[in-house]
Image 1 (cartoon, rainbow, N blue to C red):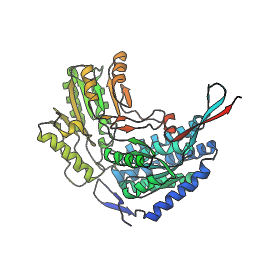
Image 2: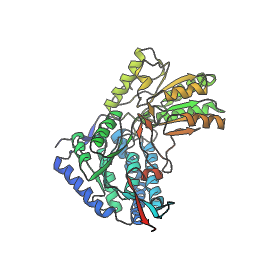
Image 3: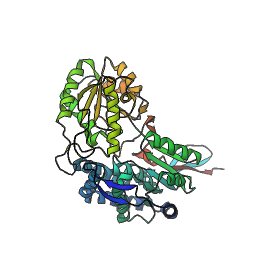
Image 4: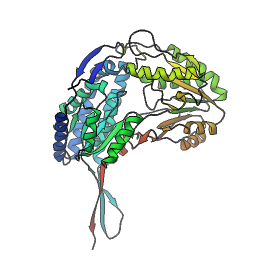
Length: 458
């Protein structure tokens, strides 16, 4: 068995722990356990499922500090931000504990000639393939609604998040979930192809890269399995007017630098009205320059390292390409000298279409600012991206804000805020950002058998 799963502290480069990958027999055993658990979990009273989800939320709250420190070591998230992630996670589990039973209420259809109802039934074992940037949150978005529905879960996490992956499995066990309801698998990509093909596995949800999403969708399609994909993003933040440009800049900087810029819905392209542009760029540059990097385990660290050396190398290649083609670097633009995968907070202007940065997702602390002359130009530019995850518009004109939001080709459009995440709001995108929705009531619809039961009135 290989040791592809390991904890390598990105702040130091030190390998802290290694974990064995399952052999083929181990993967088969995991599917067996999840398949066996489904036969009873699907018929468990929804109120009982809800109680167990509430217990999961309680455990996340109780172990928050420990859990935040685990991912600080795994992928470099500052502990304070990790605690924020865990607060959202416990809220997601609690949301489905409180609202999941009602979501499973049978729907009565107004159809003549008899009684017609639709009920939401589970479909079977589901496979989740999750990324490293929000190790607990990404899993919660997928697992909470589907466990509430009565599906069982196989979870393949990112190879650098092995420790948090095991702890999540432990939390479900400690909360009282039956054996096999949630099973962590340390599997290879080749083994995952076989997992998707297994007839007991009825769907797959992936959050990750376009390449990974395309590969999983191809395999799922070949096996007639439904999939939900949340892929990349190059979100536009459109600033048309502001009564307090300093505050708008502060929000923009905070949103872009949170998690070292490693968020799919971070405002990566800032489209600013020409009369605000100079002041915005000046303020953003100053805010980035004030943001120092440091050990994610220290309480006062505002920005930690990128998740890995390879992630840093990819970002540096994209920025170097832009430099070679004449970009203006307002601040940053290089690695932080010393050990660890630290990147300087970077502001780029004069980004042009021939640069990779113009169309590719920059997954790190790099902001691009563009000048726009009108709302029409901003909309056209925002929609020119191959991605369509989310976007925001900033204006005091409510009618204008709604008009721009309506015309953005995205799954989530915000007015005077960016990237707001809570259990009550659906999450997902369009175009190359993927398809399907997570969270809110929509999260219980993707892998449900919306089953019609009709009794004749004759």
